[in-house]
Length: 442
Picture: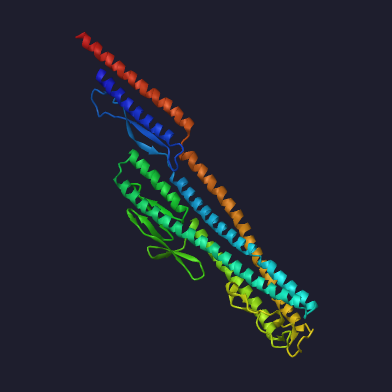
């Protein structure tokens, strides 16, 4: 009887000690990123028969059946999904804000307005050399502002591509590490502490990867995960396929997994790709605007004569916002008078035709519309990003409430398991006393 009591008490002490160890582990890792709260599974040790059974009651003690991770696959998947959406919105918004700054800070719209104002002032006195010089200076400033806008836009695009390239490399590092974790999981014993640690690592890697590119996951019975994106497999067991990035002539980017083209819909890579598409569209509109101004001005020049009565020559050369420049060096070459007019003519009808061409082409309006569209896109994406941030935060809170460590709960568990350990120790002492009493009876 004493030996039975001793073995039962010893099993209880071992189980309580294991529970104390796990509780201490939870407390120690309460602030560790990616740590999922663990609990000890205990079960009664059942006896198949004999002196340890009284009727239908088993008197064989307790044992630890395993260590349980308090993880919820659905809540973890929601954190990954909402986090991926938020990362896409953050990356796209950041890119759009840089595009907006590139256009606004270039002063392009103001330079167009100032150029048109200089033409209007020249119309009041077409032969005035100072007013002619002001027009030529305004044209040069306008060309420079186009160049600055393109350079700034290019810098914004370069930053987006650099970040996307770094994120692609990081995704590959995470994928390789995930493949290694898969292999280690296949060797880890069910319910072991090492397995719980590996599962924490797996889930942390998946969450980090989802912030880079949207992923779909499927889990094997041993905990190994298969990861796909855009229909292509990134990680399967211990195998890993490389994610690569390509850059097109217009600065936009594309992606492939193991040579198979994929189009991310979530994560920072998707946001960068969307922002670069917007940058390419803005660059196209800038080029069209610059070409439109140069074409209108040069066409008017070809229809008139300069101050010396010679045929008007182009003011602008080059194509696109990055190539436009002023090639006229003498303001006397501005063709304010119509063809056939004598030198020194005060006839400004050709200048009027130029102003009309710029006005009908809606040059200033086009520049203003470009700024408005970019600013509207930033405002709209800001609202979207804020909404996605709230959704992602809600998903995170829900997961932490379920899987995170609550120190008050762990403190209560610490006391409970300590009392269980002490009670089992007391039962072992009682068993020892009974055994000693039996020995003395002999």
